[in-house]
Length: 500
Image (cartoon, rainbow, N blue to C red; front, side, top):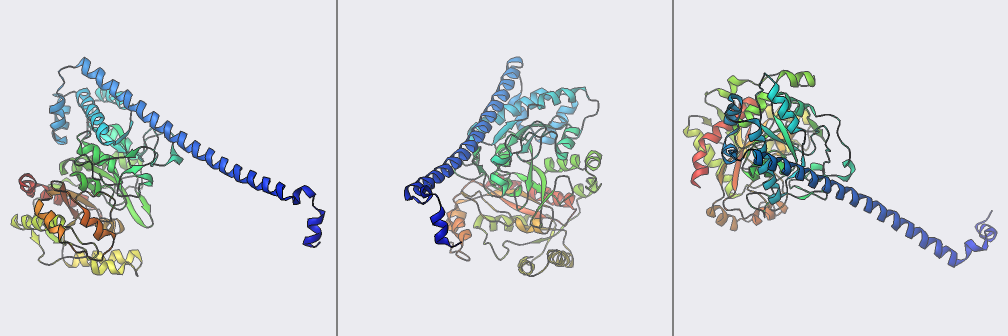
């Protein structure tokens, strides 16, 4: 049948221009309506999530008020000032009560989140868990320590949104392995913290719960993706947090917020992830290295190995962590791709000098990874990693000292952290100094490296007084050595942080 005959056989109504116009308009209206309904449904889900967050925070506030009313002499300020290791000791000996510590941190967390928007949920089961702990004879390594948990880590009875509407309303039926282990060691998870949408961002903002601010400077980002953790701990509302790191998501918030953070080797503890052949891991964030070490020691236990048989049963090596043997240290101030800011360069230079004065061997030449990084574009990943490790061992290195991105940026930026996710090396950051006015003056004369967005963002940084960190790196499965190096850096740079 010809096209002309077909049109002649059609009902005249269908060939009427007015009918066709009405049909087209109707279809367009239907599409618009469906789109509007979809957007309205998304908006309703987000509003419900915010309402649930507000209710959770109200419940948290009522619990704190109840405790304060019943215990008017609680030593809140004293409790919040104690280092974690000392806090555990006082809880175990009974000189501080579990209630006084938990409710002190709950109250402070409420204050901090009102200021910087970092808490998205109250883990209400923490009060029941506290009562269970009081009845237990054995006291774990983290006995009574309130701990904050990054949003996407599963907690029984709570949502892990990932900052996305898709996952709202999906209440988890059980705790993730790492949360189970933390509880078995006496820790009390009490809040969940904000993240950027999908977590693939160096800032901390999503459409559901909004922007998290840096508590040290509200104009700055707290970093991402564990930005809620960084902001809460830096603000004093948590003493230990669990974040995740696929390209620097523990180390960057720690750097931006003046904290210590560790990315372990993949599979050293449970719940590791892999994105495009890049290994990410859950890991601790805290105010000092001793807290990170205690957390890792607690996690690397029989319960972890029982719950997740894929985790190699390698307990924490206290001997390596506590060793005083001088280290052989490689270093670099820049990797040949991203020009370090004056404060970043100075942080590495001054830390290197202090390490040398303390009796460690620091190589006199840069251990710049540029030559091996170039190979990444043309070599299989395993070959690239093998070459990097071979060069490391040829130089006889124990660890490497290098920059961490910082100080805190106004917007997202790239960083020096990515490399060690690709290599799957344990890496941590330690704050060593703060930005000086001399650093800012030097930055005014910065002319750029490649004229790319990195150069422009670097030029925009204005951050006098904000912390600057260095990055400490070890070979795979050597978290204890990495932590030992971090502790040495922390101890030696104490004066730098105090004097600046």
